[in-house]
Image (cartoon, rainbow, N blue to C red):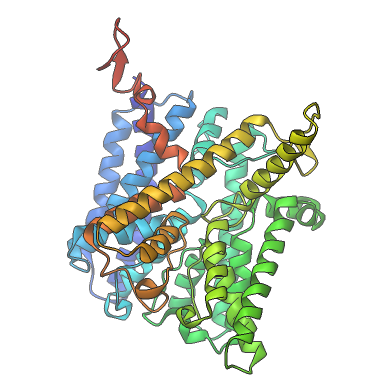
Length: 495
């Protein structure tokens, strides 16, 4: 059965996840009361991984369906296991709250149900940061970095986790690419940590911020969060710089190492990403400056730049209460939350590459309406993009909007106003983690209705896995060969 192949790979992933759980356990032993909840969960993760590996199949031949199932299973299992330490220790008594916090961490959304972060043990703050960091670049990319014996079919797992166009990527080299991406990820994290320490931030807080910034997460090690640094220009600049870096394509950064900065400036998506950020910052700044009472143009620009970059990249940090901003500036933030960063980044949202493809294909469609016989294709970086990627982009946008509308409707069914539902679903589906009003930068999601938290958990997972990975499993044909088969009447039967 093909399910045995999936079991083996998921088991190996749980080994790695269990190893990460040991880190906060060791920290709790060294610096505070030992929290055995981490040790228990680590043992559970490793034992479950061992059972899956023993019952699995070590085949090196995988299909794209296997990739979808491995990716989805891994994210769901790590979310469940990530919640255990909160529940066992009593830090979060309500299991739904623990699942929400875990999913928010592992998907790098950054929304929290913990209103007073200062009151929880630091080992749990470290665990939240680690979950961000593990999930930021992608759990599957992590395993591809460690397990080099998966063969050329490893590309299926890479494709299953992020269904965005990757022109120019040679699939048999996916494992090598994954290893280099994680190396860059670690290097950026270390540099960010050092620069934050140089700005006077406590090393523990700096480490957690570095985890969160590079993963474009948003969970903070203190209740006040980044509001503490609203007057510190150096710290704000470091945050802005690394949030922009994290929103860029890590594969392009690797090309910069090989070919120089020309590789960075020649990438069309990167240039458009910068352009969108600049336009968004200017609109936010102009709206904020001319409709505020502040005469400090530097502070206003800093607040506008920090907040816009944070929202668009899905980082979810704030140095200003934008609930008090003019409506035009708030609308710019709301629009930016849909955009996201580049493909191959740690951000959520629609992604700049999809917006480019959608705009270019729409222009071609309009031209063909005038000149029906015209032959023209979408090009990215001078290379023609296969029609399947154009169609997939259009399907993604449709599904994204459909899921958005359904989620907003469900949120209103659980008692939220239409305005709150629109903002909250955007925050979760785009993995931003920040909304407006009662769920804005100075609030938590602790008071969100129980059913709405369930919708939020699903939205965070769908947003992080680019919709297709989860939705494709809703079709019965997906499970053919795993748990069901067709009989002679072409009806599906359980194996």
